[in-house]
Length: 208
Image (tube, rainbow, N blue to C red):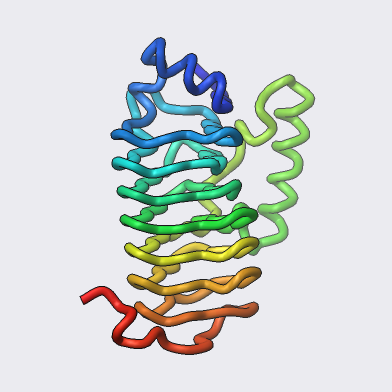
């Protein structure tokens, strides 16, 4: 059993030539740039974690901290040096631009109950001191998780945080440094922490 799989661009290409990734991801005619990383903790054999369409360019790090999660990236997307962390599902549709330094995170990582967080640190210490992946024994059943959906033709500026359960509507723009905690309406521009509507995109600049 593979406990942890870490692939950088170089090892990704080597693994691809050996077809070692066929059970973990599928993609069309897309490109993986220098800086692209894939991290799978305790991956399940023959589970397709990632689907990528055609003509996308990825420089991001995609992380699965548990045996569950799914990332779907459509056609003609660009994702810079950002992080996608999935336990549930992250769907990025077509023609999406995501800049550098963003974090798209579909779960809370820990429970709101401090007693569960105390158990987390004890498990982490035990795993680490045993030479294991430090979150190998984590209890994910107490962690809230909801899917994220980023609709087509959106643009997310640098250093944004997109949290669990959020849908960013078609054609929306998220300003740099924003923290998105709620749904973003289509064809709007949002910014701030938490992100709020700054203005609407004119009708003549929207997709018919």
